Image: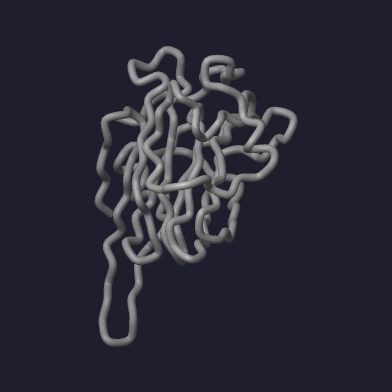
Length: 187
C-alpha cells in the first residue's frame, strides 16, 4: 500500500496495490500491520456506510468528546472528501484538505481524531464506507457550516448542494465548540 503524507500533518492518502486480470480485481482494503508500517496505529471500533445521491453534501462533522479518527473509502461512485484541522496546537489549525476518491481509484483517506469531516457526492450515487476509532456519541456531535467563509473550502459544485436540516444549521468555524485534543500526529 502506498502512503502519501499531505501538507496537513496526520492526514494520509492510501493507495492499495490492486491486482487485476480478465476476471476482475482484488486488493487489500484494510491491513492493520501495513497501516502501522506507515504510522497509522489507530484501533477502529465501528464501520459506517452511507449511500447518497448526486449533489448531497454531508458534514462537516466531528465530536467534541469521543473524537473519531476515520479511514474513509468509496465502494461505488465518486466523492470530494474534505478534512478540516481542529487541533488548536497544530500549525495547520483551521486549514482544509480535499481529495476526490472513488470506487474506481480505490484511494482511502485517513484522518486523525480532531478533524471535521465532510464530503460531496460527484457521481449519480455514491456508497461510502468508513471506519471510526470511537463510537458515535450524539451528545458530543457537532457540525461546522460546509460553506463557512473563514474556511473557504473549494467544493467542486455549482449551485446549492443538498444538505440535511442539521447540517444546514452548522456553526461558523469561529464560533465552533472544538474538541479537546486527543491524538498525536502521524509522521
